Length: 242
Ligand SMILES: C[S@@+](CC[C@H](N)C(=O)[O-])C[C@H]1O[C@@H](n2cnc3c(N)ncnc32)[C@H](O)[C@@H]1O
Image: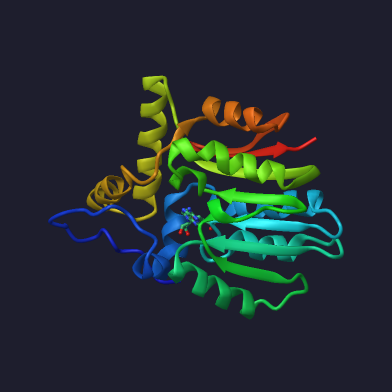
């Protein structure tokens, strides 16, 4: 795994964060050292997908990056006739994802598509994963994306939604943000790296509160929405379509 040192040196100007070749190259290290509990979330996606994947249905990994969720679904799902569609609009990510999937030649067929997830028609879906991806979609478009997902899902299918979240209460916000920074420092990132990355993400990653996420999921039709994982300001929800 290549070490992420993209923000190690002082930059004259910090540009907006993009999922390009440089990021894709170090992404595994970056996400593991930046998202507390990331490995546990990936394992949890394996457990949930094994439980909820339906025979002869589709599973979607939307914003798949290097394919961590795709690979764990492929490893854990034991139903027949399942296939996985993995989508990302970063060519650098899609190419690496395809290579990772080839290396792991397990049974379930996987189609990797380079496309904006907002243009993907979801069909016959029993499991849909949005693992730290909705936060990169313009807030005004999030509802349409979730509605498209909901409409393409089968009854008793699930959406797994993981996000970095915001807090309205200023004390709670400070506690979570400070603790996340302490986590990153313990992972070996310097104050400069943390601050330059924060600037790069400022206009790109727009977090919302847990309440806003729950409200929107209910608005598009999900009746059961349960948080199943939280570590500081990172959360994962499971939403069931009845
Ligand atoms: C934080 S990463 C997701 C990590 C990945 N799901 C995982 O579990 O390892 C966000 C990914 O979403 C992709 N992405 C962001 N907006 C997208 C869009 N509109 N359509 C497709 N992919 C998108 C990015 O290219 C990036 O690979």
